[in-house]
Length: 342
Image (cartoon, rainbow, N blue to C red; front, side, top):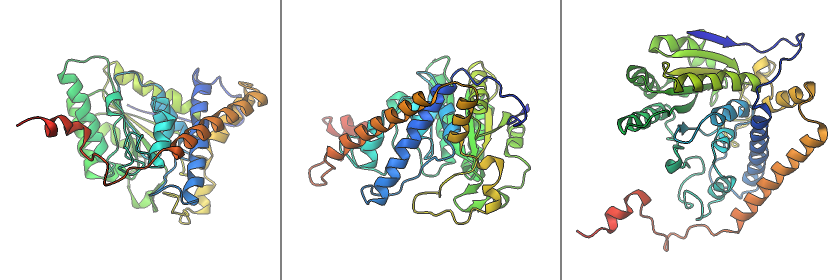
């Protein structure tokens, strides 16, 4: 089954937004506020390693995290802070990890993008991004083997990661085993600096769904209402026992691959495409057009987001980094085995 969620024509009266539109918008706003601050800290030399932000992809990401329930599996990637936050990741975990605090979930040991919350079913990403599909499938099969019911898994991927062998293997086993999986693929039109026409030759990536035994849907990733309707619908179908779901969202990454990258390879023609709109500005225009919130309320939400970000950063900055000669570098998962008597 292939369906497309089309962006509304500007000549038509806007339809009522999704019931969770404002909730999702606030996760987008918090994420944009946080990531702009992280970029500033990175450029000031206060963050070690890279910074990879999701500017332009917040609507897709927020929708990914918003519909998940306790017991579900979530496998976000580097541009999915909005989804991570909507799924319950504390802001302090984020700032502690970026600033290298020993109080953070990684205890200052690893890079800032590989954090996860395994006990809460948020998987830590593997840098070989296509591999996360198989990891998610394995987690879902493990829950099935244990007799659990009513859960689903949602894995995020970019269109570049869709071209890897691991991705295809994951798609195949997901369909063969009929696991309750939703894959949300964000086509941001560049795999680092490689454009779509050098990545794949099919007309639309969603066309691959039927070949694997998935149900496929495509959408305008700049339209928050469309993201909520289509991704929310895919989650509902997966939970109801339908075949695995593939959702392909079209956007433009509105920054470089990372903050070290000036994105000079993005053409002016691409920047003028409808998918190059800023999803946050589009959502704010929808709020204004439909009178969903007044200007005073929006200002208060921005101030609240900034205050939360500033508090989390200030807390993390006061905390000590790890000290190599004093730290216990034993992995938490094997501590009992290491310390157990022979």
